[in-house]
Length: 229
Image (cartoon, rainbow, N blue to C red; front, side, top):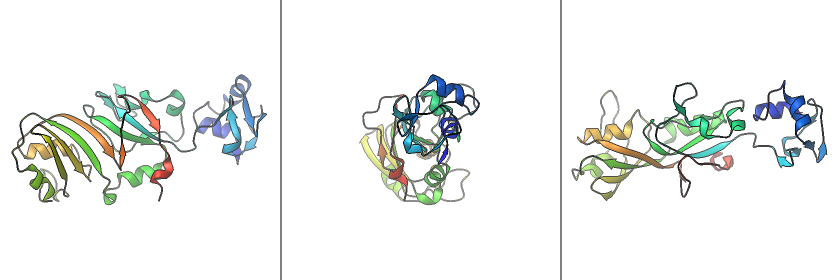
């Protein structure tokens, strides 16, 4: 059990100092009985705000990232977090992206305020699967599928070859690439290695989650237990 104001502030409803005023302006109930004292102690599941259950204590969000949005809290420009509700933006600890997508890359990205989950899904040891839809400037050479799956590509600046990747050809300038690493600009560098250039990059899957029919710029909350061992 925790104080009601502790829940309200950590989940982004208001600050601790604003809790008393917030509780006057909104109906806060514990076991369906309205309370006004911020120091009232209760369980998360027993508290409601304006007859709605509190937000989850830990969030996992799937977002369809548009182009030109930045996966950062601090950079100038359009930040990915601005697409989320204000309340979620005010949570403590902060919501962060699980990995990053470049400013010109679109598609699926997960966000969470669960630091342990974030670490687990970004650990190089976990071989988390990612699938990208890749549009190329030039037609394929014809040997990319075998090359990428060979586990022999050594990119400039790297001391170990890339792990095997799976290439699915849709047409000669459009492919799906499945990788289990997240090296800097990896997909672009892989095709540069074959003397080609990526002109559009869209992530369709991460850790066996898919965008499905989620519109660009939209998001939805996922069950965090899907990723808890």
